[in-house]
Length: 203
Ligand SMILES: Cc1cc2nc3c(=O)[nH]c(=O)nc-3n(C[C@H](O)[C@H](O)[C@H](O)COP(=O)(O)O)c2cc1C
Image 1 (cartoon, rainbow, N blue to C red):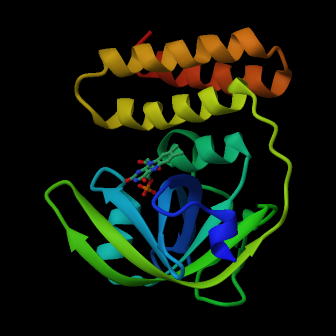
Image 2: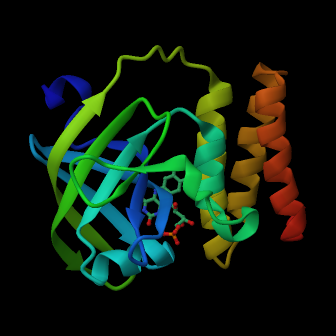
């Protein structure tokens, strides 16, 4: 069944939510990969500070929230800049001791099985406890895919020393978004990213 939803060994983007420290719900975007029918892997860099520390501290329960809400990707990636996520967006999973983000189209409840530690990152292996995915329509628009790309690169801009090439990639993606869309929704997201770049004095 899960194989009908996800291709194995392919990275999908979701938002990982968990309690850390105890009872405090938090979330961050993470790429995840189905490696077996009941098994998911996530590569977590040290720079993803809270998630990395939650995992090495032995916190076991996590939810992968499936959403197309780009604002949520942006807000959960930049909690330091935009403020912590409001507790009211979370509800406890009925299956594990982890919070879910309301209004997502899918939830994968997972439990940590093992961690492999490397110099700058770790690979966390999770057992799938429960999966719920609603059918949705996704009609591709480059406004969406390029914005997702821009948000991912923005998290790299924040952590890497050599910004120049990555900022160029972000600006390239934003130009494509502007070319294919003039909606308020996408314009506001583009503007928010420009604001971050201005704040960091990169443009
Ligand atoms: C779509 C998307 C996917 C991401 N995937 C990963 C990932 O797989 N591993 C990782 O370490 N960081 C990833 N990041 C970056 C983290 O979300 C970012 O560093 C975040 O600020 C970490 O928050 P935390 O300190 O609360 O863990 C991703 C960011 C985005 C926008």
